[in-house]
Image 1 (tube, rainbow, N blue to C red):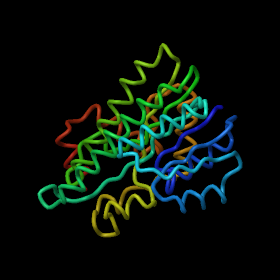
Image 2 (image 1 turned 90 degrees about the vertical axis):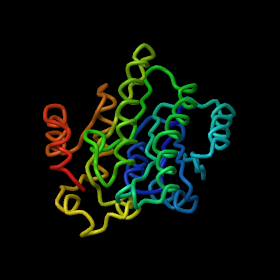
Image 3 (image 1 turned 180 degrees about the vertical axis):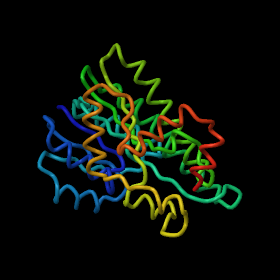
Image 4 (image 1 turned 180 degrees about the horizontal axis):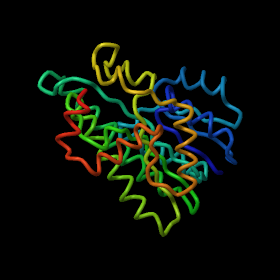
Length: 251
């Protein structure tokens, strides 16, 4: 049974990935998030292909074991693994809640790593992994120190894993969008006026970003960055001093 697996599928770009997966030759799409009712609504509204709703917190290791058992029981072959679950919070670390910062690391880094490791057991030649990363992976962001650090991990993880999997012909792609008008900003506490930088930055379109990431993955690309503005920023991050860019892009 060929499937697509999407984490963080209950909102934002996760929903757009789900919509795009309807166009693929799949037997089933597995959508994973904590909000079961929301997943059901999305499936009913946008689902064309058979959809399996999995209400699960992937930061809980027992749940990842249950996920592995589900894959085994169903003889699943993962054609697309879309690691979209993640969150960020704005604010100086010395004023932050230590538990929330730890939860960010657990979801953005540890859970992604463990979830991918298990999923690889069920992937074959010609499969794809898409990791939702961020422009924050290009340059460290003050006031979002932990979030930017987790996304730098996702970028490094993507690049090295892609190299490892070349022999298996499984491509790994990092999607690195700029700000999008989704639930992410509300969860991050980035309302209007909180950050002058965020207020000024051009918004990426979730639907176009998801579609572009899938297209880039199929072309064998490692990184996909929507919008020319952010493509330019990515290039500048390789050329200009990090400290200078941090000052220019401060949140």
